[in-house]
Length: 569
Image (tube, rainbow, N blue to C red; front, top):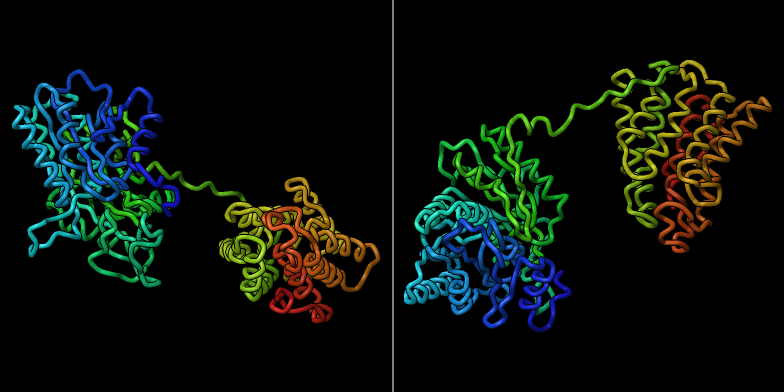
């Protein structure tokens, strides 16, 4: 949300802040407000001037400087700049062959830029204009307004800036601009409206589970509302709509994945990857995939895709160097470089010493974890981020899959949790499974209690070396340590049911964590607020030893609590 806008002179303050962040690059004229690049390429004979409402940053000011624009005129939030701003900025920036004005197709922008152009012509300054109208959502035959101008402006300004640095004349720049716009289309979608600076509330409401398809960069509602669907399906629909609107017969495109203000870099890069694969599957080579927030709509939660069918000579313009606040990627993709982005996975050798047939323990543990999954998630939501149930269940599923391809049961757990499960607890469980995998497991007879006790103690020691946890810290160690001790004592004394004794100790250790203040892990951040909530990781250990007992000592294991009852708060 836009919580921190100054109450007065918001746009001027932002302009000064940009200049202060880029010393020596930008100067600010306060009345009327415009920003001008302090230097430019000596080959440039035409000034490039752009502008529009504020709230779209880094457009246009991000492309101000050598290799980009010569002057930028910011209006108020989502409002066109005044013609005086444009006129005086252009007059100040004009070069020997005049000025090219870049206009986004909105009524206020068009009128004010065209008035400024008339004033410049009256003064004898050569001037031409390029109108950006790339928004596919507003491509309607029944309106005279035409398509809106959106994120293709970034591509246009970068190509124009590079061409101007080569000494291109005014008519050549205007022709290039018109050609780029004709070959560009954009489409945007949003899951939440931008925050209104005047009300502090979303500018419009969306029903749960829906998206606005075809939104504008001023917060205009989409042309239709669609059901929220997996992002792969959404990007595929947008891609198909854009390709149908672009000229046929082109096999290279530049693709911009633009955040609308509140969409994370993680999301934009993931969308870029999906988009790359969709294009290549359709026989189209992405010359570049460019993710980032370039044309925002304040803090709207959404993104747009811009596709520009590139001419061969434009690639050099795209990769030409710039010295602007916004740094665009300077490399292009080839099929070879794209194919080498993701290396082939390295196959980790299976653990030795375990018979591949030892599947029953893994299957029993998988069943217990599945029964307890919802409870583990609920517990973790009370003291952490709620992902423990998913991580534990996901790791076990991966182990089952590995086991099916030949890796033994406990060894499969070790590989899955060490190599595939993220977070903190997953790899720690992997250390335990790694040592347990050294035991000779079999579905036909129980392993030696002493060997399992030694392996459990080795896993405990490894976990302590890595994370420092000890009994009383409210972690999985509170279940593992007593289980290992009970198993060692039972083996030493020759007890009849050593695995049941270990499971009982693990269960009691796990239940005891409800009275502890967490001292390790994410639960420690909530401190005493976690008292009364048993540690989910300790239940993961208790379920493992309960599974062990139920496989090899079913008669005595019947007195142990079932997984769902055990993990219910």
